[in-house]
Length: 146
Image (cartoon, rainbow, N blue to C red; front, side, top):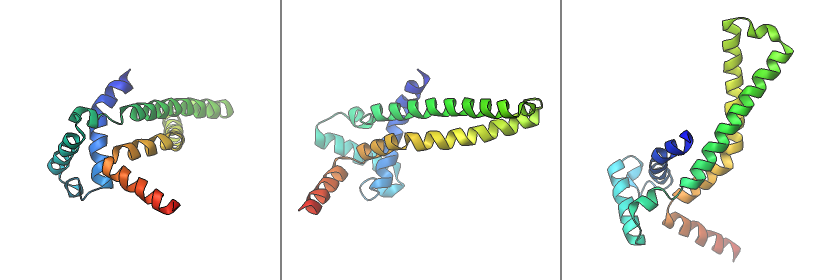
């Protein structure tokens, strides 16, 4: 539930960020937030869609990515901590070794969850690049096929 609520706030920022990075010339030069928002408004108007629908166009993949990321992260963290404590139970006896164990397990969990959720991140980025970028990619693939 908290992930979905967080995604409601993050999704518009992700849309703007991805478009500013992937097509800086069309979206405020990559650093002008006002210019990027103006370009998004113009894109929504040209598409005949409300700006809100454009800003939340990647909501489903974003939630999917975040849920997968969180599940894998917590599962991996618990698994690593449990496996290490099973092999070396003395590591759980002091605050310093518990901290080091948590840091190590967190590192492993972060890397694992990032690797596993990366395909969803790629889909999200492709969806949020905008209609013009999708058209360019489509025409490029058609030209390559010919």
